[in-house]
Image (cartoon, rainbow, N blue to C red; front, side, top):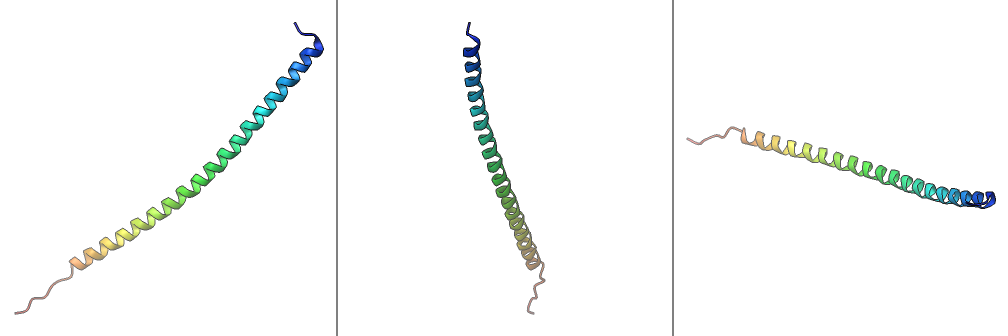
Length: 76
């Protein structure tokens, strides 16, 4: 059994260690939030690019469709 002073010192050490760990976890959480924000931005950018490519493809398909629908004339 520890004397009261030794027990208080041990509790203080435990508290400092817990505070150090908590600070580390807070740093990891902050970093994770930053990474998540960057990933969301990249995802939004890729989504925008995909939508643009899809619209371009639709326009090209429509153009090809229109070209195929052009009536041809025959010479007699």
